[in-house]
Amino acid sequence: MAAFADLDLRAGSDLKALRGLVETAAHLGYSVVAINHIVDFKEKKQEIEKPVAVSELFTTLPIVQGKSRPIKILTRLTIIVTDPSHCNVLRATSSRVRLYDIVAVFPKTEKLFHVACTHLDVDLICITVTEKLPFYFKRPPINVAIDRGLGFELVYGPAIRDATMRRYTISNALNLMQICKGKNVILSSAAERPLEIRGPYDVANLGLLFGLSESEAKAAVSTNCRAAFLHGAVARPVPMAGSDCIRCHGESNGEALLCSLT
Amino acid sequence: MELREAPRHLMVCEKSNFGHEKSRHKHLVETHYHNYRVSFLVPECGMLSKELKNLVMEIGPYYSVKNLPLHELVTHEFIHTFVKKGSFSALTYNTSIDEDNTAALLPNGKLILSLNKDTYEETGLQGHPSRYSGRKTMKFIVSIDLVDLSANLDSKKYERVSWSFKEKNPLKFDFLLAWHHTGAEESTMMSYFSKYQIQEHQPKVSLSTVRELQCPVLQSSSLAGEPEEACSALELFDWLGAVFCHADLDNQPYNFISTYRCPQPSTVVAQACLCTVTGFILPEKINVLLEQLCHYFDEPKLAPWLTLSVQGFADSPVSWRENEHGFQKGGEHLYNFVIFSNQDYWLQMAVGANDDCPP
Image (cartoon, rainbow over all chains, first blue to last red; front, side):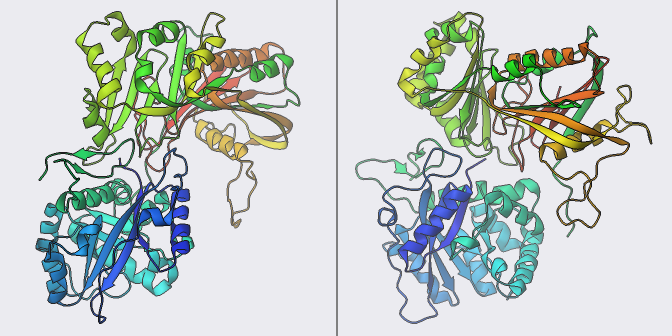
């Protein structure tokens, strides 16, 4: 099994709040977190900013509770797409997108969902939980996405905040599970405040309500998150100066060297 | 959508007599290596006898080291000084069996490594996939027989293990250590591992007297109980758990916190002695304690039975012998003796979801 991960901590403008979020996550037992920057091109003049530098946040990273090593902080970008033109930023090779460890897309229409599953260079596809699904899931694009190694992300943060969202979260999740059979699903918090994060075993139990089996639910907070991160590392490698090896951050002891994968 | 069943638990109950020649009690205690908590409950007892108290206080120290590299555990010197002279037990500390790499040295000389996929591939050692790893194998178990290795230091096997631990992927862990040795060389531990911040710890002992305790009535001959006459082994197991949690044993059905009631038929005992020892406890010491508790009934006592419960470390890679142990939503592997005045006993062994059936 892999270490527990929460791949969606909402980055506000307040660094102190973000620090509090990461410290809470470490206290709850998460070994890996990703700070999520959301970009919505529907609003005018949206530019992708540079990700938060981890060194700015912490001089010493908080230690994960129950382990003797510090928490790993990744950076993630989520792009909300409502129009095909919004996807262009993902095709550009020298854009700021490459500065992020994980790239996620939040498609709002059926056509864009299909494009995201089959063509876009992303690691995660976000599933709506705050409203009724605007489209039905179809098996073919989902199967293609699973083959490509993409993950489907369900967040539980809105469900904590509001009872109506809870209904939408559960019903949308069940819809997804019927088609994808529980594969490649990721559960994350979308937390803006420390009180909105739940411990990894509790989130795995929540997965049972969504229709996942015991082992699938546990994988949704550990193994599948690791797979999403590795997918990002391989698809958008950051070459190190003077070497052919792609270095990616690994959990557990040491760092995994993925050599000669270009 | 249907909610599926809760994760499975297994419990093996057996009954026998301590005097019986084929009784497995010693073997089962000896092969449960990593013991975290030992508790015994003696009904109708206000104060422990001096022998029991001394035994509990002298269960023996355990040690902790920081950042001990694995190659230190395969050197000829280590194997010769510790593994061959008594039983040396080691378990990684602050590692979760379901998330991280874990290592354990069993008293029989086997070094068990439970490794993540990445680490396993980096170590380059031969192992087998974990039985509880899920659809995609993410965990591998490597088992190295140290005694076998030390018999032939020039073998290719020893070279490969040495190379892997020293150069290819030097793994370091914080360890809990304990050593049961026949000689009187206590200080060797402290001096041998002095480079690794070795610290000695004494197990924590807590003694308490429970008053007005409702105890189930048991008949040693029937594990399943007799309706209206005796409670079953399963009911006793649940009841014992409630006692350890200091839960109320007489709840009403509408109680919010707990609806647990002591199984019937039951009696109320005026007082019972509850003693708990927590630490890294060697199985040899538990066997001595078990024997002493059997002798409790040498003189006639009011108590019809007493219990001894032992809980294993949730993050140990093995439960009994080399049976793989995993942590799904809980990592319990424990056993409980119910010792009757006529030297009959019940033994209940329980494990959680990601575990092999107890022997």
